[in-house]
Length: 203
Image 1: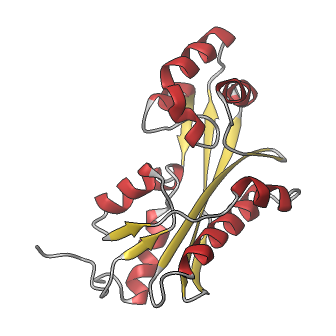
Image 2: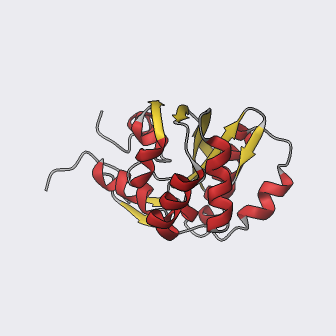
């Protein structure tokens, strides 16, 4: 079957994220998923004081570098997403109660998603980007937040901000500004642009 991918070997995705895998698959990018073995929470503590953009970039780079050690000569893609509200940078909630608190804090306000990617080959950074999206949550009652957290289930713990816009998370918002793939955690426009320039994709 004809393909736009012209590199010799598939991309290596340093992530277990189902949404990132689905985005690559929908764009016709052949890949194998190899999640990075890093302690994200510990790294976030090391980056304390850094802005959301920088934290996302550093985590994406750390993931790509970690996996690249095991795949000589392969393009390895690391990705990470952070959420910032003013000067506060949010991490993934660790339980349903923390998820509810995050949503309560974000309700009625506009926050920024920073979606970083880093492409590495043999330990060398070839490309990185961290585009942003702005999302405005509608005002939410405590009763609605509790109902949403229960309905969304454990999936809310997999995403920064405790929502997945492609699922029930869409019910939380009044306005969404930004590229869809950036909001889902893998900015395809920037990624595909580099892959074309690199010669991995047909131009």
